Length: 218
Image 1: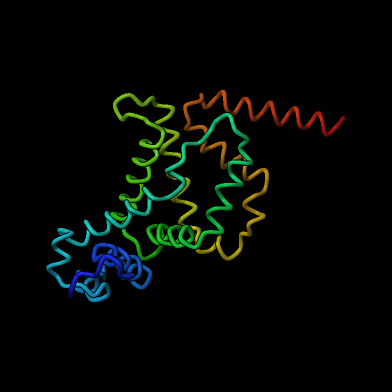
Image 2: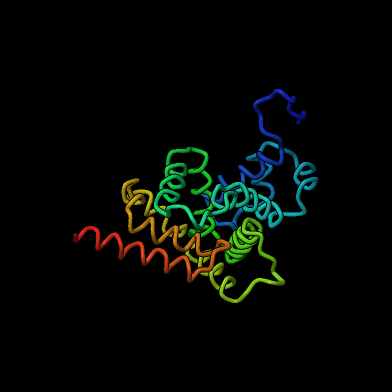
């Protein structure tokens, strides 16, 4: 197949193969996807496939890493001093109103769904953790135990949400996600991983809630 012109709307072969991976994973179990399926769906030849990838696992890793690293969640460092509710509102509004981000979320949800495999879940876990560490400028050799556990807790929570996403997207509204309690919990977990002390952050949130409560009673 001739290479697309620079001004062509046809995506490059590598991108078409990654797109084919997501489409096929939605249709069938990962263990039933073959290289032949990929090249036929992407409309490339086998030589093109093996030019870019050594096999299906490498293609899967490339597709997963691309979606994780390009997600706004791991591109924007949380601000521990900002209002958690406002940060959450801005992030969730972007996710829920941007078609490309909805597609990204749907793709990642496939990795936690019934068509996935332990290998795909492990790749998602590793890439999500790695991307968060890069975003927060953490070093594997110097990270403390508390932060290490918080990273695992956060990535595990993301996997749970992705596993439930097909159900959640049918029942959860924008207003549900913007609920104040949800915002405090979500951003509390997220910004706890920032460079501010986790305990100091939660103390600040707790004291703020107490102050708000006294103001309301008065």
